[in-house]
Image 1 (cartoon, each protein chain N blue to C red):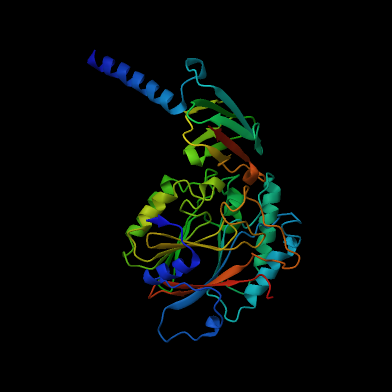
Image 2: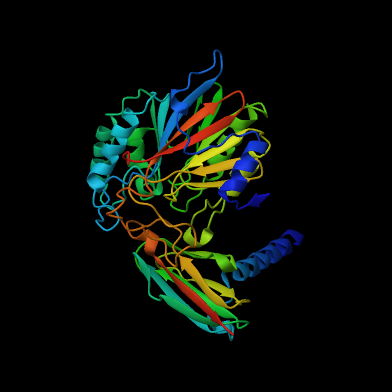
Length: 121
Length: 298
């Protein structure tokens, strides 16, 4: 019986951990959702405009092959996987223009695959 | 300790740290080796991107590598060995074209008048097929060799498209280093910078810090790498990192322009910003004197 309870708590803990890592599902939060789809060799958004201090959920996926999403100034990165939506919840804490780019080599054009996050007051 | 330094500071630091660095010196290649001294020199060529086409960046792309080979062959003294630190070929999605480019590259560099020529992959060579074609033509992705008392370690931070060394290779590196004295002269060859040079342009290795942590206990470590298409010098603690110029087009200094892209070809100064380097090594002092060389003599 004790083993069963331990397993139940372990399973619950695991799910909480997964949700924490991948972000809260959009339906369960008030944070605006920004969808970003990658494909060779571009994202469907060149610019993402955010407000400082306002939480946001990025939903990232890919249309063709594995790409990456890296926003180093906020220490954020995720894989962009076909058929999978990866959610990142974060709150920009500084204003300015910050590059994001694909960090999984995807071919001739990889080096130009990126965009800009613009955070305003 | 991890810091950016300018050229003057680097010279000072490198001198204090036991490494000897100099650039643009003339006449050193003709100097006789002191009797019994473990001195030798090697040539580093990098980022040749054979197969690249882009007239604005390099209208002579079909000949630049051949001219570099001729320049190495015309050096005053024959190097002990030559190493290519990655991006031998320009990437392509087509496996047949990839292999054709590798075959052409291999044919061109076979004209080098040096017996010992070593290769390493860049992401353009190896990231799309995890190094399958590269290994068919050039052998192992990572390896070690010893020369005149210096232990060379070639690290692969490109065949994983995520630009990581990976746990297996880090364990291999640890095992290799554990067999070395802490004061043994060690040279690391790699394609991408092991330190976070400029993450905003992806000039880093995802787990490069783990490799540096393994190297730091060793007193005499120097890293030679490519990828960023320009000469660059940096210290992480006592470890010096030297980036080489490209043989296809230069890239701008990190963060100097909004977007990373080739520096346009200057018709008034062909091959400007491109070149290769000769490295004179003193195994006893673990010192390295670097001489940057142009593709063609001006």
